[in-house]
Length: 185
Ligand code: 5GP
Image (tube, rainbow, N blue to C red):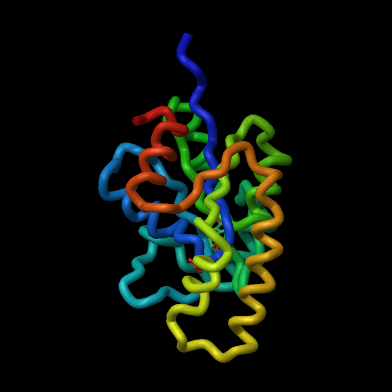
């Protein structure tokens, strides 16, 4: 009997490199299906609607919440982000592995609503390395950096809630480990 594909959630502190890992996997393994989230955040340069996110306004997001369209949703850094439920359920029913890249509150909601989901925590090699990544750009004022570091401490403390921890020593290594967890390696 083949094992039913599971929903896999990749989460971890801001700045740890989740989106870099995902971008690497997207290139190397187009067969893995990633959920595209909806967000009220404005697109960054180079981001395209329907690729990185579905960029929606507040009113549209409100409607999606009211309709129960989201598997989970959360506020993060002044914006809202949510995983559209239907495509995820459809892919799982078709037997495809599904990967979500979401922040901590969303991962907790998935744990509640889909208890057999596999929760993967991406951890930095060390606290110093995370500080370096979060402060690296040197463009943000000190109070913003302080707030991000405080938030990172809270996020790191959630690691024991996850099924598996992967340490982001290199993008290639983490991608390979994640593929093995997805059963597509
Ligand atoms: P960014 O604005 O940098 O693209 O994403 C900010 C944070 O939102 C990241 O930690 C990312 O993982 C998270 N995120 C992206 N999409 C979703 C989603 O659909 N739900 C939740 N809960 N978090 C999300």
